Length: 255
Image 1 (cartoon, rainbow, N blue to C red):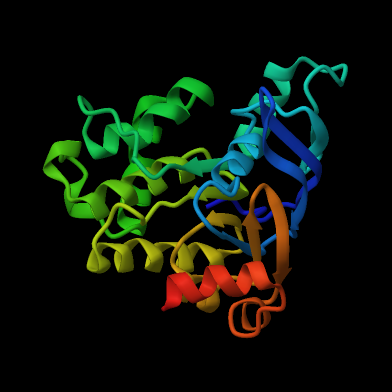
Image 2 (image 1 turned 30 degrees about the vertical axis):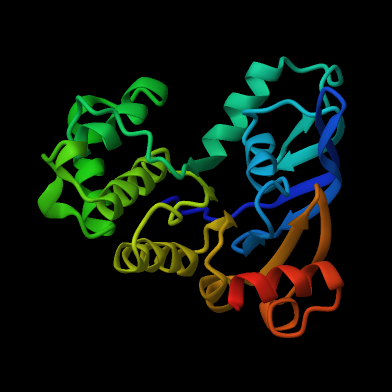
């Protein structure tokens, strides 16, 4: 784990649209070093798009994103080459996707060890040793030599988390990483995230797990229709929502 855990993330007035269709409309959120921020809200509200903008996977038209010392400007702005900025941001922020994105022809340990070798220049033996440590960290020491098709969904997701941690990030972006899992497997993955939270990493999570957001997040942000409609401590936002849109969303997901 990175000894200098935690970094600040600040999104200011972000506007992202596809053609005439706005996806993010003036979104401003922040996460302080070591803070866990849960993004909740209806499907299509812009949550996953926001994470992809933060990680440099998508360009945006207005606003800026600051990740630690680096600033991602709006499309067409800024002097530094965008590829250079994206690379710098991705060395600070790991990203875990809903669909795992493991290489099917590599074992779990090889999946985790690959990026440090190719991106950081870590020698193979060191990368493999570190990968085994990370797999043990997520409870998969005995599955190091299994291929993805030999793993359950929860195990694949924990390998994906270990792979993100292999780059020694100071923060993690997690995009609905439990939505495809059954309840027992979700619990396995959420336990790993809670452990990382205690380590002081900055976590920005898109989740539909309202109970997890209430228990583990420092702040909850509600995105709907491309806008932040409410944000604050979980006890306020989830248990005492102030806006009609948040009340409507929670009444639907919580019954």
